[in-house]
Amino acid sequence: MKFGINTLDDFDFKSKTVLVRLDLNSPYNKDKDCLKDITRISAAIPTIKELSDKGAKLVLMSHQGGDLEYKNFVSTSHHAIELSNLLGKNVIFIDDICGPAARVSIKNLKDGQILLLDNVRYMAEEMTLFETKLKLSSEDQAKTIVVKKIAPLGDIYVCDAFAASHRNQPTLVGFEELLPSAMGRLFEKEYEILSKIMTRPDKPCLFLLGGAKVEDTFLMLNAVLGNSIADEVLCGGLAAQVFLISMGKKLGEVSEAVIYGKKLEPYIEMAKVILEKYSDKIILPSDFAYSENGRFEINASALPTDKMISDIGSKSVSFYKDKLSKAKTVFINGPTGIFEEKDSEYSTKELWNHIANLKIFSVIGGGDSITAVNKYNLKNSFSYICTGGGAMVRFLSGEELPVVKALKKSAQKFKK
Image (cartoon, rainbow, N blue to C red; front, side, top):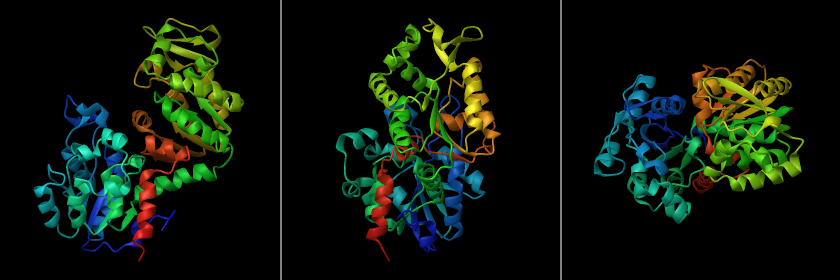
């Protein structure tokens, strides 16, 4: 047991039906009907292989697509193909979740066989609106249809979906109420890595924060600065622009329209409070870049501009590189510019390649971050790449994640 949670070392899986919740959610190309990136699928392989090799009858579950953008929903049949290729072993797929066909398939599994159920988000109970509007307890989640139908067929539940561990949904927190439970190897590894950053990072510890999800940045800032986890925070992306606006700086109509269009006003107020407390620890860019038939840079002192800011400038990149070279731990969440475009990828490409060449402990996480890592072929250049985005941010903010809480409760409830 680690962190009060059972691991795969705590059970005998031979001939047991094991329900495994994964997070195989991957970028999807709708036009070509294929997955664009299989990083999360690859990360799940060690747990699946270990359980299959130990003779378990595996029932895999995952969601695909964010339900607030329901058009992203697609079948997990694509994932079964990728899993089969990576494992070198057939992964059975059934286009059912908890209906009669799925239950018969589960009952017919032989030792070592692997079955992947269809996208659990096809169940209304697994929708974010179901979660946020009803706010059910884990006990109530155990009474939902998907758990009631499948749990009786299982002997053990394993959660290896750390990336979704901030969710309070039936397949994530309901099974722990009814079955002995454990975390998978990926969950265990990500929990360990993030715990190290939270409790004992080698100093100096720098956070490089960017991306478009400003809420993620501000969720963790108070915790990592207030608890002296981060010695300094280097800002890029929209977070840097929000900080500047909070200081009364005019960016220009186009850039400000993006900030206000995303309804980020609450974070402008939060930025003011954070700067009052930690102005010496927040490092902001001294220059920026915009695209207009090429890349152009502008000093922060020369703002506002009628162009949309798309990256931080080369002076800031040089200054950030110098800071990073003196660090012993670096945590990265989000690109510092619009890395998808040639004229605005400069800072992300330069800073991440620089960190990759430093002999330090470096952790990077988040969906866009993983995409950028793959774009620059840096997959093996960081100490650890965390599959979680929202879960990682909430963990670093000091929040006890619903799945962590459920797994701890199960460990106590089903003590041998």
